[in-house]
Image (cartoon, rainbow, N blue to C red; front, side):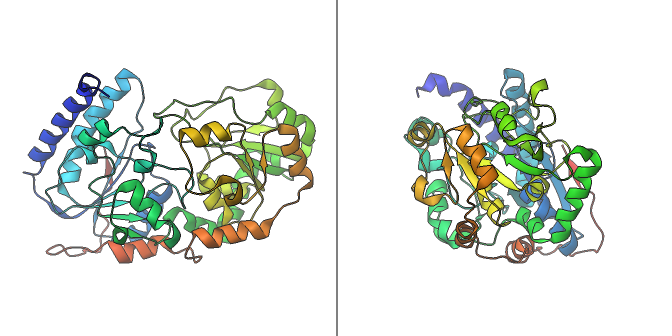
Length: 402
């Protein structure tokens, strides 16, 4: 990557660094916790789980939300630059800055304040490679780029699901292993409470009564590409063939990656079989509703394994994907379910099995250290320490967003 191609990035870096330095002249707020994400426009997932716990544990803290999903268009990128300049104020003045994914402005600055940055990485376990583990691949960052933008820098702590994956995150983020802590993921706490599943089904049948009594198949493919909206969409199973083979006893829920548009074009021939619930249901609710999970290389398999339900993999482009991105484990021996490349075989497995739930259970035990539904509480008690001279007032501060 030559300097000319990097010029827009270098200009943005200069702007963000100046903005951050100026914002460091503002008063530091020891009572302020900021939650930030560029993968969503709303509070959800790990950030929502931890926020709910922190509200109970530290009601007097001031909570700020910085959620802006980046649009890959030129206008969208410009809008995100302006958002980053505003975000500098909260990076500079917060006691804790909590993220769940790649967060570009953090990698452009030299942190000079006492802000602790906590990375609640959105994926459990360790499956497909990410971060510096992909350096040198077509998917990964180049040395020229990371020289100017040291990705995944400025983290104080990274929270992961199990001790086994610590070395992979240390490699991906180029961090000391002692700063990667296996406290569990807050969003998975929902999956341990039976009443959440009952509520999700009541909600589903009130909005889609025709689904009552049907087996629900969740199809959740991984994201392909380097930016929002950039992915292949023609590598999944043939939904029309699935509908024909499975009949009226089944329905398919499609769960797209957050980087993709929230709606897929409606196809009349799939009416009554394919449903997309993203607007009405959280990811955790969709997991609780599903009787089967079909994916390719998505890390959603880790969360779903906690429910001990059948998982299968539809991987037509396995060789190409492994070449482009790679995995931390050997794919064939690692995955907790059968691998298919033909829709007919997949549909037959859904109907008849066999379902190796013991393998799913062993997979969950390998990639989660705790099974108590208290990950958010562990993080709050271990990593969040209200600082003097701030004293908890007992009143909830107003949560704000920009």
